[in-house]
Amino acid sequence: GEDVEQSLFLSVREGDSSVINCTYTDSSSTYLYWYKQEPGAGLQLLTYIFSNMDMKQDQRLTVLLNKKDKHLSLRIADTQTGDSAIYFCAEPPTGGGNKLTFGTGTQLKVEL
Amino acid sequence: ETGVTQSPTHLIKTRGQQVTLRCSSQSGHNTVSWYQQALGQGPQFIFQYYREEENGRGNFPPRFSGLQFPNYSSELNVNALELDDSALYLCASMGGGTSGSNEQFFGPGTRLTVL
Image (cartoon, rainbow over all chains, first blue to last red; front, side, top):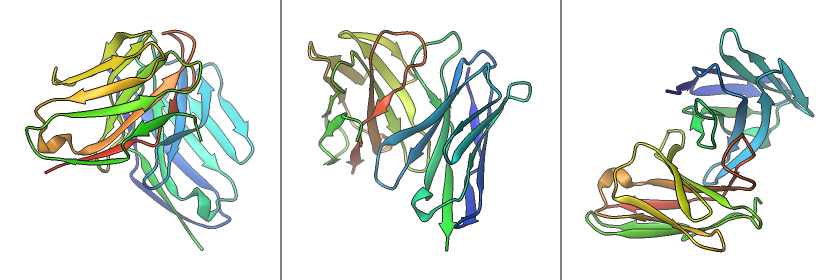
């Protein structure tokens, strides 16, 4: 089955880069996702990466994928206070489909 | 805003009661998934509906049931509520079929508290 792990907490200063890490178990995952959840809100899809890619950049966001180590990271450049939230990585199930398995989430705190 | 709406936003029930949560999917989306997010945890998949049929279920007991209507809106019903059912319940809609990894659009959730 799928299992997704993340570190629980990250604190950075405004303007610095944030790197949020995730490990996953299903090597057959075709896509991997990053979601953002602000307090009291639902989930917002930030970005996703195809499994045949090593890197994807989207404005301030950079996703790196190491398939060999089953490691996914999200880098946020020039982190702002509005980036403070919980970030989840997620993978679809073995064999495909639309059910997502989420990690426990990494709480990002941005300090002035 | 994702275009996915859920009602109610908050709900308080007591143990043993039954609850119905509602979700309106984004226009044109025929697939709805429900997730349970306990405090401090990631969302856990409950089940998914595609064109009014259940299309996949997570590790939840039968007292969790659902419906999808012809307009693709959906309900989540929970019978015999337990204290551990207290959580944020999220629905997510997506369009275009049952395979692949199309983007899922999440609603704001319903916060259920069971006393």
